[in-house]
Amino acid sequence: MSLEHLYVDSNGDTAEFPRFYCQQEEKLAKLQHVLSGMKRGSKRYERQKHKIAKLHEKIAAQRRDFLDKLSYNLAYHYDVICIEDLNMHAMAQSLHLGKSVMDVGWGMFTRMLEYKCKRFGHTLVKVDQWYASSKTCCHCGAKKDDLALSDRLYVCPVCGNIIDRDWQAAINIKEEGLRLYHQEQAA
Image (cartoon, rainbow, N blue to C red; front, side, top):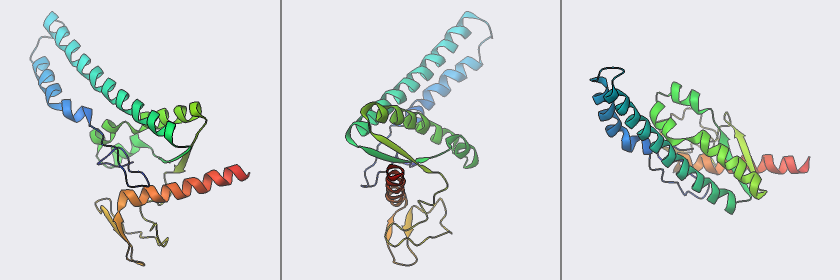
């Protein structure tokens, strides 16, 4: 999962998520402002509420459609998909990134991936959220404990490897996920 994109995979590819809520936020604010000046219970008030509800439905439908097509594409083309098992609700509250985290729809995306992988007979491996994927160097395995969330590049203190933080996390998640997958297959 990435905050700038929906995700970054182990090849360095990203999914350019359109951020449907952010695109419509200004229009939604205008509709809600008009609603605030109306008398509760009047016909105009109810019509305006309906317009706001329709806009929310449109945003949700756009997000669902985008995530549905993307998850289908991934589940169809890959036999094993490894992802982080994140608690998005806690992440939105603790990092004060509520709207941007919730706009991504990561939970919906993972649920779609899960049932589509089952449909195609493929495997979805969830790596524990506490696995230090961002703090561990993907080349030498050294761990950098003082990595802040604002550090978007990872510079390894041991081998000097410089790599995008999200890409490195994706590589580490893939390696850990494949290790878990092979461990499960052997058992």
